[in-house]
Every structure is written in C-alpha cells, then in structure tokens.
Length: 154
Image (tube, rainbow, N blue to C red; front, side):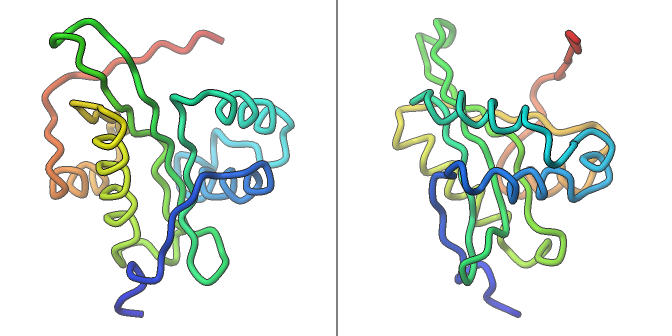
C-alpha cells in the first residue's frame, strides 16, 4: 500500500489500548527479550502515565487498528535558560508496516506536539544496536550530539 501513512491518525492512548501498545513494544528483536505481555505492571504504569499532564502516550491508528505508538515526556529544567525539553521514547510501528512512512508521520506528529507544548528541544535515545533506527532519526533531522548512558536500578 503506497500511501499507508496518509491513512494514519493519532490519539492519546486509553487503558483499553495497553495490551496493543505492549504488543508493539514486544514486536522486535529487543522487545521480545524484555517485554512480558499480560503482566499487570503495564496497567499500573499506564495509570501513572495517564495521570501526569507532562506525559503523552500516543497510539497511531489505521482502519480502526493500532499500528504504532510513542511516548512524549515534557521535562522542565534550568539549563539552556530554562528551556523545556521533550523526550521521545518507545517509538514503535507494527512490523508489517515498517518502511511505509508511518514512523515518519509519528515522529513529525511528536515534533509538532513538542513545539505546541513549549519545548525548545526534542531528544531521544536509541539502543546502540538499532542502526537502521539511527539512520531513520538522522533523516528526520536528529543528530547524535551526546553519549547516552543508563544504569539499571533493579
């Protein structure tokens, strides 16, 4: 389908969408090893995200089906003259629709939403092994300006 991206709409996720979102998170080589669909922890996490006005969990729909998701978090800070930042996380497109423009539309939506909410910068992290994703984000205008580090606290 050539214009699949034109058929996609975006909305805030609801509690009914949690299972579909978790499926998308688990639908790749990294997610299969870390996600556990059906675990009640996802519902608790969703409730916390949904209650926070600085968090946007978004689903992309096509023909009534959820085909993508992302989370946009707004972060206040003092650096850069108090510039608000937006953090883009968990960008996923259903595997059979990857490469058809859905992810691009999702990211364009996130960029616009971040600007509308007063963010002066949009940042993201991407697993070091996701080289295709890195090229995708660079084509959208992101640049690898920092080294990201994480520490697991569990």
